[in-house]
Amino acid sequence: MTKKILIIGSSGQIGTELVLKLRQIYGNENVIASDIRKGNYEVMESGPFELLDVTNKDDIHEVVKKHNIKQVYLMAAMLSAIAEISPQRAWNLNMNSLFNILDLARDKIIDRIFWPSSIAVFGPDTPRIKTPQVTIIKPATVYGISKLAGENWCSYYSKKYDIDVRTIRYPGIISYKTIPGGGTTDYAVEIFYEAIKNNSYMSFLSKNTTLPMMYMDDAIEATIQLMQSDAIHKYTAYNIAAISFSPGELALAIKKYIPNFTMHYKTDSRQKIADSWPESIDDSQANIDWNWKATIGLDALVKSMLQGLHYNF
Ligand code: AKB
Image 1 (tube, protein in one colour):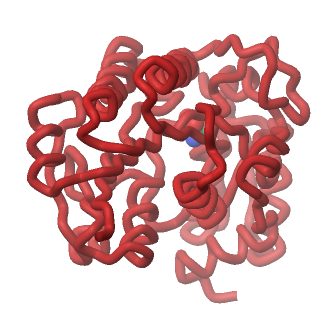
Image 2: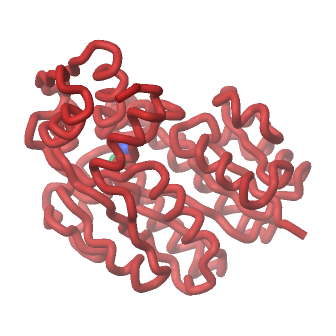
């Protein structure tokens, strides 16, 4: 019998596409979408959806019991830029949601968890180029602090209660089905909407701020590959990598398809966050442990974004 899967945060950028892909693999009825708000039409129409506040333990229990859930992907979180504005709310959401799910595994109600971390765990003291899996980890942001604490809690629960929890440190994710909200890497999504609509974009990061990025298809592939792997024996928050580029390089790549496109720069508080993050990531551990390798480069990403947003070129 197929084990039932619950996606929490199914109206968010990654949650949306994860639901759709997991439903293709495991069947619509076996993948339950849930969020505090309704989301993408395809998600709402193709299978079960529950309105759920992830900070409410009783509500989660009820949904898990009702659908006989065995795996949870906890995708709800407050991202880096917005977390700086509401640190306490970010901490409460990012941490309490995790405890609620870890406790379900500790009590043997569910048997596998996916919990996303981020390149935000790294800080200004971390080596910035090809940042290794194991290195100096001292985040400089509220979001990064919550992600690092989460990694440590996952590790603690996995050792102490012998639970199966799996984690990826996502780079900036680029996609067109649902817009991201509140992140520092969001410019790399917004730029496509503005390029198509207005032929220009005002970047809130400077021209040469290089960050690790990834197209959504690679991120979904990595997530599902890690969750399906039989080779994971010890909790590791895996680095994964695909491409690194700056706003200036992305603008050039877009110009190839929209020749009139112009880019302008006006940095804001998000610049400081970006400056504390790596430029590129070493993901060799993920490659060794579960064969991970990204496949989508910058040009393919740009083409796919423009096609996805119905731009004719
Ligand atoms: C953000 O910008 O906050 C996120 C992330 C890198 O985790 N996209």
